Image (cartoon, rainbow, N blue to C red):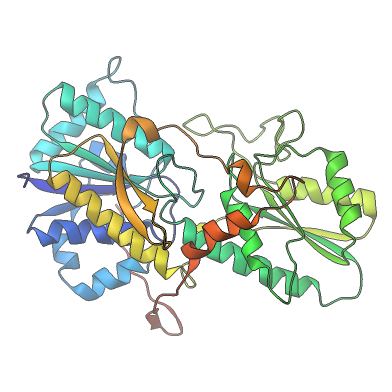
Length: 404
């Protein structure tokens, strides 16, 4: 067992399960009697020596259970790209000096593609300069686009929310006799996993969504119009990814990228559903509206997937155990068993960082506007079960850490 204390931080967009993963990391530290610090606002907290000791807070098991069912990022988050260590080592020396100050020998970073870039750089620097700190990545993202894992923590709960919301929207749309078109915009810049999950809303009493568009399949305006014509549905519901592109690879939402780019160079997208709304309203002259689910997809925990939460706790604990064993430069992941349960695996962080896993062709229908039964079989096990929610004054009770 490795000597020293733990530190843990969360990064990127929050999810309904990212705190369940944090719960698992804390449990892993507690199981071997280790002190664990939480860095506020991701790697910023490490750079600024802004740590909160978590042992006193979560010695109360009731707080740990509340944490598991609390949405957003308990420790706060950030979007920050570390510089190249060969050209700017100052920030790295600051990071490891702060680790040394608190005798931190194990650092767990919970995040997505870009966060694994941080894990990769910190681990490589630690090894190269003999810092003696194990750096382990634990995945999270509702986008489900990380390499080396069957799925990502947070996706199952977001998929459950999307499918439920689309089902409810479809029933609302169906109450009037007038023809209508409703376009629901779902998160996913370049990978359409979450938009594909809208198909789970279909049942014996609803066919919605009637059309599903993923960013992996270019969509011309003429095809969009033809698809709507050929569907012959009175109250149509269309699910679109925020990142759908035309036949030239241009984003529907912002072809000129007027909203700019984030720290990692990704286009800031919004409004693909509105663009589709305007196209179809002009073409068909019927009642047409767009709905953007936006951050509700990642922050709604009142109907989370119990499978997602339980597996998120397990992968957090596995990440802590890997760091205790002295492993570094790895990212935890899942492999799927024949009975649709999951085993935890490890990947080299260099395989995961800054890469995206797209929806494969066998999950996307050939007509370019639907998903296949294979995708449904893949996704259904991820949304099973609901947690018991503690309420206060009629709403879910959460736990929070006061940020500086």
